[in-house]
Amino acid sequence: MADNKRVCCQPERGLVLRDVTLMAGSTCVLWGASLTVPLSGMTLLSGRNGAGKSTLLRAMLGLIPLQAGEILTHGLSPAQARQHIGYMPQSVTDAALLLPAVSHVRVAVDGVRWGLPLRLRSRREEADRLLALTGASAFAYRPLGLLSGGERQRVGLAQALAGKPDLLLLDEPLAALDQAGQERTVRLLRDLTENLGIGIVLTSHETEALSGAVTRVVQLADGGLHVRV
Ligand SMILES: Nc1ncnc2c1ncn2[C@@H]1O[C@H](COP(=O)(O)OP(=O)(O)O)[C@@H](O)[C@H]1O
Ligand SMILES: [Mg+2]
Image 1: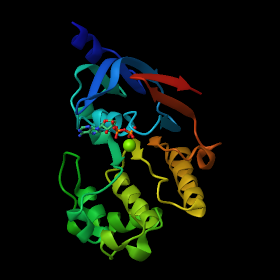
Image 2 (image 1 turned 90 degrees about the vertical axis):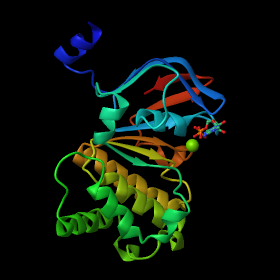
Image 3 (image 1 turned 60 degrees about the horizontal axis):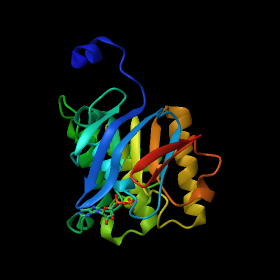
Image 4 (image 1 turned 180 degrees about the vertical axis):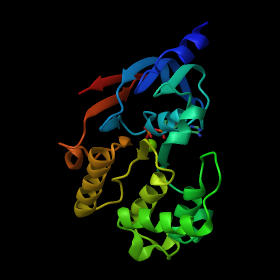
């Protein structure tokens, strides 16, 4: 009955957690947590190191199962929602560091969406467009492992934008950046939210660099979530 109701009605916009219990290994990061929050603009997911921010982003993508409860993003389950989400993880695996930056973006352009794959030429053009958008064209053909932290962040952002997502989940996009790099990234993120209408959820400890740019803060603490506007 509840499922029928959901199909018939307008899906709830934003992020909804209902009685979510979530474990990372043997650590409980959420315990019966509920939350309803819009996802327009920029949402900062804050909390101390080890609070469970990265784990929650992965659960929103269905990469980690919940122990109890449900997560809906714009009315969709994590498995459905990830078709519409671009994700930039906190780190990449060592093997991936050998590939040129542009390969990461081309693979992502082919990506996670259903439908006919793009022609090789279109895929290359789209990857180049995304690398230009994030200011990463100059080092696109160097192995990812030889790039600085800031350069890798720009490649990661280009990769997350592949597939034209409605929502970006960015895990520590300002880490490893100097002040100028942080300001440039925050300008780019503002541009994505204000001009392209892409919602952004990001984790960061760089509250000063983000001041004025963030629409709302969701605090993860003691197994619960609290919204501050
Ligand atoms: N795969 C895992 N196995 C065991 N423990 C994990 C795993 N991933 C994360 N943890 C632990 O879960 C807690 C939350 O981690 P994380 O989500 O990375 O926190 P945050 O991103 O807020 O720093 C930490 O105590 C971390 O050590
Ligand atoms: Mg983290």
